[in-house]
Length: 507
Ligand code: ZN
Image (cartoon, rainbow, N blue to C red; front, side, top):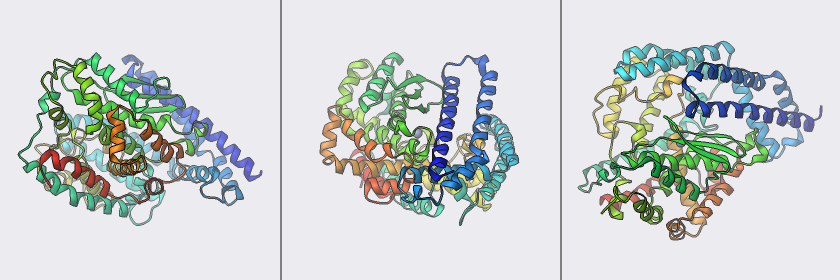
């Protein structure tokens, strides 16, 4: 078999697997939105059946033979060619799934299923000791996973690589250290400021039907294609890129709090614009898939925060918002509303945190995960370590583990190494936005677009520099090409200072 034939067969198999996974994605979306309660048993069987088929296809030894036949051939000599990028990432996925012993995969599935249930109960009852043995098992298995996959320097690298291929503990540590050093004093200064927003303007009657119409209008203005996607309601909002022509986003409406659904929709729209603008012809192969979780999150955060919480955006949308909700916003001036949607206030819960304090929640989890994985931190000591570091970083006493180390689902499903991608996303978002503004004529020119409700030039820049590349480059390289610099916390810190300095009268 020639290298070209082997590559064609690899692509055919990858596309077939892409179709199979897209079937599971539709079933998963339906489960979270419209499936009747009693359908849960059959749905579990359907998804397990598809997962089994997908796993068998992904780990078929024939894939290893085909990869070996292409690697080293002229076809992949240019590392930026379609074939080289696809083969590099298919190899990465194949190695990762075949290096894990079946017994370990099954044990992880069994332990994390029980751990998720135990976590739910322990969180509700503020009972860390009940969750502790489950988390100990999860950590032990994740350490075994790191050994099986292999790593340099730190076992956490093997876990991080699953979510952010190519990122390393050393780099992420350095980025987080710089970020924390700059954020802590800024947040302290904001806390000490006498200027406070009036968040009550967001906590009034906002009828759900009108919220829906308004959010859909904003998503459409950003460029979400409703002929190639849907917006529905769910308990835990998400974006599911089923495949070309079909991307599902979801939200959760709160009739007494405007921000929850609206900024959630902007966030998921950012994810969706990435999915809708991946190159359809490469669907199923790495070139047709998102680069990393960090880059994915950069797209959601860019639209949600960099654009959606900006003055220019609200310059266009606030008059329309007042028309849509004349009672809730009667007598509310632009500046009062703008300050309310940009409140910075240290709080206990990560998912409710503002764009400045959010990253300290993530820095804390990253530190603790490193300790758990290296063995320097025992699971038994987790609540104490959490509360101590939380106080140091955010200045708050943690009243109970429910609002402390039990608040997130991630550790119960084995998602150790996932958290850093949230902050990497925020940092990439600021750096990309800054580069996009420069490329599009500067801050005034891009703000002029936004204040007219026009976002097409920004979306095109993101498609050109991020979306269309799929996994052609790793995240660090993609960032360097798009912005001219490696990832740094500086653009994000500058953005925060420029925005919150005047609002709070600090810096
Ligand atoms: Zn997200």
